[in-house]
Length: 324
View 1: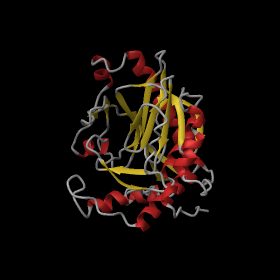
View 2 (view 1 turned 30 degrees about the vertical axis):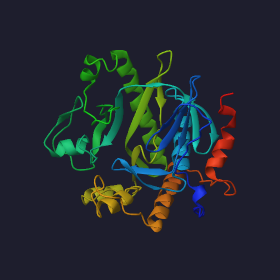
View 3 (view 1 turned 120 degrees about the vertical axis):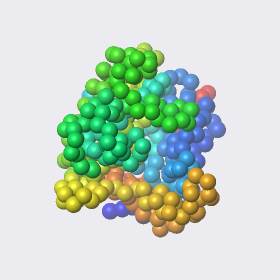
View 4 (view 1 turned 45 degrees about the vertical axis):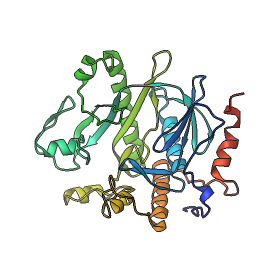
């Protein structure tokens, strides 16, 4: 049963600024704090980001992302180490401080995608060799690949565009050592295989996903950020996929992008003021995130008690992390 969505503004987390915590960095969705002792505090807000701006705040979005990632971190900790140290709050993970590796890893099991670097976009342009792989002729949109592939891109830390890479380019440019690439590739493919297996048991297809890896002070490669969440992954519903694929239709998915589509249909979101998102659309997006959590994990979503403002609750739960 979907919980009652919060009516009070202080039950939605638009900003997670906590002045008592050091070294604050405000990302598009997360607020992070470097405690200076090898630990990071990562708070997932309810901000919805697109077009390089914040479109809206979606109730429970931060909790859904944190708790979905928690489900997957715990289900894959036998495959590779991850950054998690503690979960002091439903929206918060405390993790090991890492140096993030400069290569973004996307594993793809299907010929899908819409961005300029997606394999479907490149394939429809006539390209068959990409990211160090050679794809066969005759594949249809959204068709399963002969085997899952890794499509690495350079990580654009300075706001530039991601650039497709091949494994040889990664090593030749010194972005990763040969051993690092071998280890990272093994981890990514094993994580994806586990994700596809567990998703299938829930009636879902894990189509593709993004992983972020870093190294700790000893140089060990560790999984960071999030894993198999609705924001980092594409899921389709297995039951309706065969018929829709046969008809050339778009597979059924957790469609969270209708806010983005609504905005894009009404303005140029990169240059024009963003119109106010209707409350009904915000509520519907929240329900989609909750449905995604429950379908992916098989767990009931538990909304926190609403008697305490969410930021006050987080501050209380992080009191022990405030430097003396």
